[in-house]
Image (cartoon, rainbow, N blue to C red; front, side, top):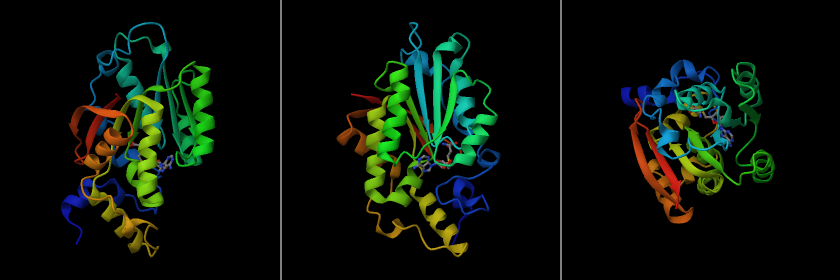
Length: 248
Ligand SMILES: C[S@@+](CC[C@H](N)C(=O)[O-])C[C@H]1O[C@@H](n2cnc3c(N)ncnc32)[C@H](O)[C@@H]1O
């Protein structure tokens, strides 16, 4: 039975469309950026020592949907003292329509870019992200954010896809801010698909990585991806932890 808790706490239950990749339109009407931003310190870049010097600071937002959270986070981290011109954000999403919407409402086109890209397409993402990094003479992004994407990759690409995603994120970033959906969201997503008469996610029943998803993600990053947990920013109103990892 669907509980009040699973209904309130799962973004995947509220949109009437069948968005099998989590590519909800109007996502931010039911999960506004403030839900996450309230937990992230405005002085994060300064706290990480990324705010000094003249070098550009590069952020990557993986699975940025229509860009509302990317832009809000960009503004949030700019703060009072940071120089806007040196902070750059690249957001990408596999859904081209969402990217068109993100581009259309981008208030900082010189510093924020949105591109269509599937993180599970190794070759294509390697080319696109490397060329962006090379342009800025960097081998990694200073800060990579991945909010509410892990479950969609996991459901659509299985345990291997989940682990590859984490390895890919780690290889791309000095610091990684991760919001992994909890297991109850997987059940809600699968149930919704069934209610709509669609067959289950290919991998759902076969997943061996299940249970405490934030812990699983953290363990994989720490054991296999040379990252370490630096800080937890606490839990969102949807009971999802925001975890900050850094390269060891
Ligand atoms: C639930 S939304 C979260 C949006 C945003 N990150 C946030 O938390 O506000 C998940 C997003 O991940 C995107 N996504 C899912 N799988 C992806 C993939 N393999 N590559 C890129 N984006 C993906 C979806 O299109 C969707 O926009």
